[in-house]
Image (cartoon, rainbow, N blue to C red; front, side):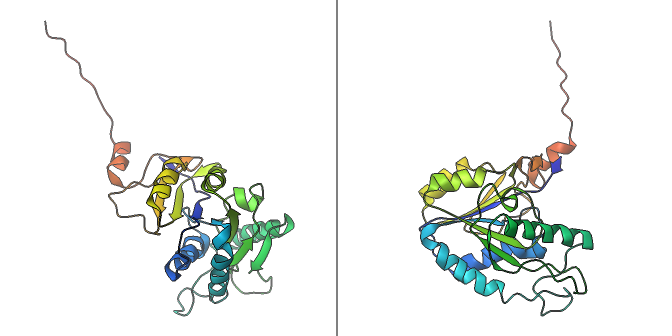
Length: 233
């Protein structure tokens, strides 16, 4: 079994209420553990009619994040795992700027700082062909891209080599069921960041890997089936 990361979508439909709960989940899905999370939802696909409200609330909270020693209770986000990984994350942020994404907050880290601290970064104006829209960054970078209808949202969500984790925010269960069925992802979460307990499977489609962790499906990976067939005459 292999779990090989993702480029997971966070879809906000037109009817979704842009509540504090939704914004907190949007933040946590991208910035938890400094974005060093295989299931991180850094592609946030938001309907045009609610995107301005969404981004206005996100940017206010991003600017309040305190990055520092994780043993300091005042810190909201710790460091990258190594100097090399910080350089990788900074490289993706710079590539996003170079390819035309609109930087709203954050940016490349300071070379004079002590430690390997990446800046919580927020981009708008993401295009599907941009590097930061296609490759796993594994760092604190939230990228917003807008859409006009559910078919367009689905096309954007599936336009990746990965398929690990997806989220949909909506009050319309009919739309949610239709979208969830068509998203090419091993897991789809609705109006929540929680992915359940050990009884529910975790794993992906496409280049996000094969097999499943947790649940009875995971136990099947450690068993071998044997057939003994006897013909009685």
